[in-house]
Length: 367
Image (cartoon, rainbow, N blue to C red; front, top):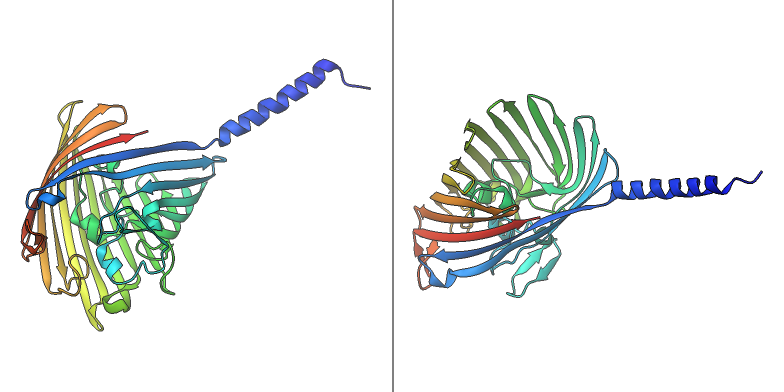
């Protein structure tokens, strides 16, 4: 018996309806941001310039409630002698030697860390998840991307004391009172492995009604002086406290060692901290104040092993955040940094100053 025409139409309609529903459910989501700034160095006029700091496109594809994949593509213009997202100390000691590099218009090189911020597959099961790929390191108080922080600049603890991105596997577990991340990865900001040893670490977050305390630990073989491998170990403690509905207080302490960091058998070590507060005055603007300090014993993190010795830098930052429209905001920042060593350039470019003053205006648009 042949099916009647209405039944055929109903079956065809149902097929296309289900297909469209599955496509809509699996349709990738796209987001991102553009970050522009004007930065003026009070000591070096040539450093007063407009910058395209970052442009990022984030694509996430969620096939089901459990499985998803994400890639964050970015453009980070670099200056000669600086590699974005990678500590200068790591570049000097060769830990990015196996990365594929391309050249930007200024002649500086970009690594894959500059082009692909994150690229991972995530699988959730209950209140836990497994992440495999390249992802932001779950450590510390400050976040990596400009729209996620209150001010223009990052602290020295963020710049020198912690990894930014990790490549490997990470398990996240959570509950009402805690969250836990455990990872096993190639190393600090390394997409490709530059040694046979891996880095492991994690962060335990303890949740309270008005705040969070995070305790992080990272350990693994990294390059020290003259390409000599040695254990790099970091202990990091961060605190976020909501003092009032419109006031957030943050703090972070960071301490680390690099075996063979100064020379064979001579370790480098460092410690630093930051305290900050953000106060939302109104819907029009908020104010951020931050004080941070970093001590590098041996030159493994800030100015390089060639200069060696011990250096302490302190910085004071004042910033204002102005939301303009949905997704659009600008920041105005004044930052002064001082050191107990002459590590900053003067007006001629010579490294003779023990301090610098920076004024920055930044505009970000997130979509």
